[in-house]
Length: 536
Image (tube, rainbow, N blue to C red):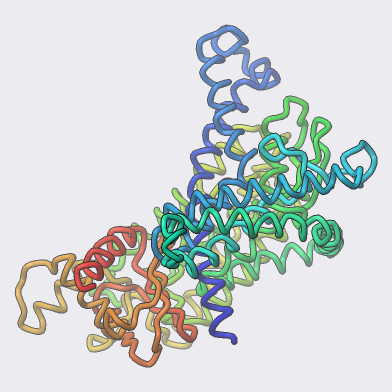
């Protein structure tokens, strides 16, 4: 049972990556547009002639603001499509359109049920219970509605996309059956949600109140748990409800009830009336900036200084690349996995310090939001450029500065005290460093093979072999940095073969296998799919 739950959760977390990957671009559009069309900002910097109403730049920035806003306004539909696409094993495009159909029909059915029972009238339901979804006045389900539709459609799709109907109805068989069955099923789901969701809505809001009432301790627990789930690839599953639903709070902004920490922040960003960003919303985001921008570089420096002298030059290149990736893009897995598998204790310290970072940002009213991650770009755009009066971004710097030596000295002490085999300290016969393609070539040279770099097909063949053969692979996909595979027989998986393909690490939980490569994992996945298709 645990294996099944893990497999479902890791695939669900993976399916969130497509819509989540859209948020940085939408956030940049909205961020630049809202920042430089805000009259207060224009007046403060005396740039009325450059950015004032009627200028070319003002027109362009207004368009950017609108383009970014529409993404955040329609995230539920985007998640319905993205989750259905990500969870589908084959014929993904059919699952995507069926996800949209299921989502629309579910909300239309809910709206009809509300109308029949006279609940669309003003005051019939509590404030915030209703919301407009693509012009449909329905229950405010937020991203949860999209996830429900996406998961339901994906389950129908994976079961029926090869269905054979009697000759008379054969035209409607196969993939054509999926939007049909989705429409029928989600009419029923809509009726069911009419009765269930109000109770769920109240439970979510009460749970959000419980987290909020826990105050600073609740913020620490959130930050600690979010980091602790990174190795299992389940951090998106944990964080998304806080960022996108009433679990992260609900606020009335310009007369509109907005739920979810991310949605509250960007609604405030778009509002010209915002004097200070809500810390109760940004406490689920702001805590990343101090340890992303200061803590992780401190850890990297400790790993470098504790490396063997003859290996420091190599380690410097690896750590510099991984650290810059973390700081500039917010993708921290390359540096985190460099010490996770060699020294889990260090990762435990990292999780505790991350929780403290979140808590301190809450205590000192840091109101900096984010889109995809706590990168330097997000910090400048949504913190510095918004002004210290609105975000208290300087406090994030003041929290981050002492985090650097705390990370550095705690990591350095533990590495030396317990002789952890972090990058650059490994034995010559037992490498535990960050792997690159050059490392893979070196392995082949040492074993007497060709000095030419291994081709993608060779890497794919090695991965397939490490997974127990093509027949043992039930499901294959990837997220930002790792392959996510479901296998039929986990005993056939060979970790050493997978690591020899250039993987930084392998995470296994029953039939769920995650092989970590880094940002170029999509190229590996594409080559792997081609190879698997060729063997089919």
